[in-house]
Amino acid sequence: METSASNKLLQRLNGLKFITSRYLDIYEVISINSRNISLKRIFIKLYTNKLNFIESLEKLKQNIVSEYATECSSNSVIPNEYLSMMPEIGYTSVIKNCYQIENAIYESCKSVMTQTNNTSFKNSIDNFLRVHKNILKDLKPINLDCVEYNNQTI
Image 1: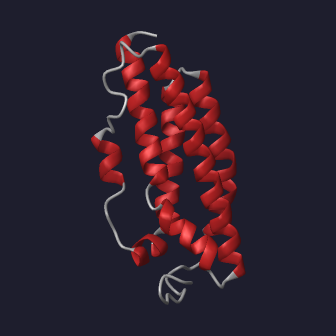
Image 2 (image 1 turned 90 degrees about the vertical axis):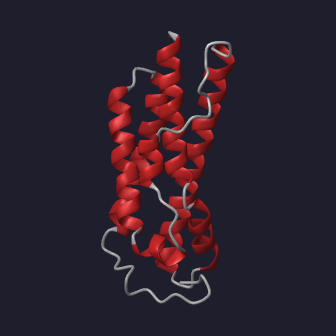
């Protein structure tokens, strides 16, 4: 792999890792504290799937950096397109927009998967997307605007 290709791969990897890990702490709180059993199950699946994907991206990143260490200058650069996708918003906004946020992550991952030639990266994304698609199906019919929020508990 040439230098620019490895740098581009790392940037995409960092971007996906950033958008996937964004708001993860909020999802963890919901998966632990929710009194609504249905929501709790969905958020446990969501949190677990995202955490597994982040771990697989981190392993892939380590492999790429160790293989191309002298060539990779941007191993921690996150492209602006990913930064702008996940702005700093509050707890309630994250919950109310959860489906839209997760659908945007799904579409971004799908797009990156079609643009990359790295088989390990494609496999990691594909594994994540298969589970994430089912979580989105579970999440879509829930009206999160109607969920009551009390001290970060729903």
